[in-house]
Amino acid sequence: MNDNRRLTLKEISQMIGISVATVDRVLNNRGNVKPATYRKVMDKLQELNYTPNKSASFLSRKKELSLAIVFPELPDYFWDQIERGVRTAYEELRDYGLHIELFKSEKYDLEKQKQVVMDLIESKTFDAIAISPNDSEEMADIIDKGIDSGIPICTFNNDSPLSKRLFYVGCDYRIAGRLAADLLCKFSGSHGRVGLITSDASSVPSATTFQMQQKIMGFREVIAEYGNVEMTQMLKLKQEEYENPDTFADLFSQVDSVYVTSAKLQVVAAHLEKAELAGKVALVGHDITTEIFEFLRRNVVTATICQDPVNQGYLTVKTLFAHLAYGEKINMRENITKLELVTKENARYYI
Image (cartoon, rainbow, N blue to C red; front, side, top):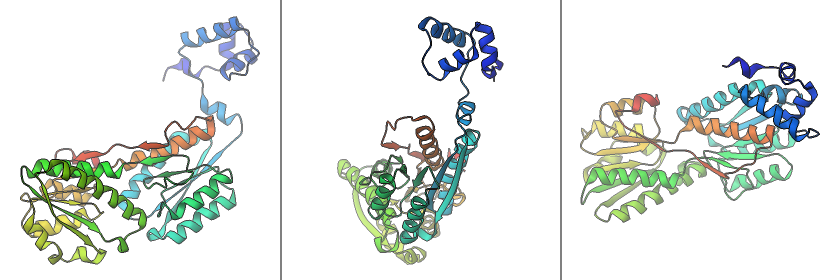
């Protein structure tokens, strides 16, 4: 880092020949400075390539900020990446007086999550709350209560668009479904047959159900647009049904490609490999784990769509902090993170 960036106010004032107080007023926009003096200070700062130390400025106010981050614990491979992004942002901001506490929702238990968030709101311990809601509609009232009580609340990964939440960070699941369909249509060629595997709504949290509904909607849109590709089957499976190889036999025999909307890509891949259909039936799903990486390497999984979870955690913390610490306006109520298509050739960069 350039040494000029670490100059003190006293050193700058001596270089310009004006008081420390005047330099401080210019840097912090406190007024009571003649235009000519202001221009003189700014010209010198530009010459020195000086960047104000926001950390020191913030700490001088003796104000710490506490954020509560609430999210599910499963699937752990995904939320571990979200947490990595949260911790990266924290390491960058800890010297600015930031404190973060994580609250994980056990097994997507909605009632427990509702109670946790209500307790956080009523405790008034935290300056803001970021939440991945287990149910967008059920959590909306609680989010609104927090907002109405003066606590900024944002959502990430799962949204609650009907609430008063400050902003949302996460991917567009409808576009994710469209991307999967476009990819499989290209693999299938003319008059291809595609199948879709999703989870039964009664066996997964409503937030997950919403995500899968959006993926299916986007998927169907693109299949219809292609016209020459047929969606032959859609399996809606309970969690225990994923473990039975017979569940997939009929589907595998009728299709050229399969899209898995749920977090079961590695399970379906294992069944496809055992059926000796690896490389014969294209398989696309979501996210990346060491297991999925190995299936990609062995050409069982054709591609997987990642939703940039590390960046979701990172952007959530950075955006909330900038809003709270410096009053930065929330310019985007929806900060949509990028979707990344991962294949055998680039998978090593995602593990």
